[in-house]
Length: 230
Image (cartoon, rainbow, N blue to C red):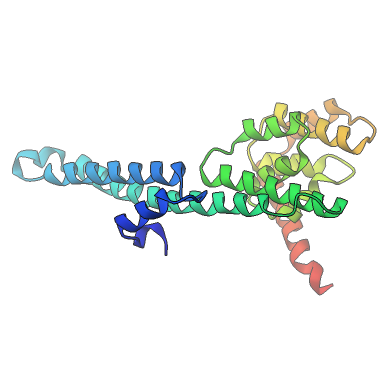
């Protein structure tokens, strides 16, 4: 049952259990929902003839407080789901074949990035930090989330021989050149390819229009959809 449909006592019982979620994130989001509810209550008391000159503002406050209350509840549920995904990934066997260990590392990376995204903490600076640390799985998952594409689409574009795929994803996500440069450098280091001509890429990136990048990205999505039928 979602948190929004749960009794307060039942949620508190779950919060007190020796389980990874719900935890601090969900509890904080519920506190935010309560704050928004209290704001809505105060605003609804601020009605009547004596406040007639402020009704437009009061109505806007009520609408926004109600919207924030709903958003906070959804964030509480998203936080629990994301954290459980991280916990599930860590439960995968730590020892095994090279492929199994790689799959476990990827699952953990993807779950952590999803948790950051659901919490609203995933941004360009986090992507740059992943890239500078050489964390390809995390960087790829983060770019996929910000560009709103699947992991496989993002990975295929990230692994293209040329850097155009990276620039398309970054432009759609609204990233600065410094972050794009960090991602390209990561690709070069991990793949041991010939160093990319960064100046040429910078010139291309600055000329690239967001609308053009969106069109190219739509083409990649369509290719992925059509691939199983081919």
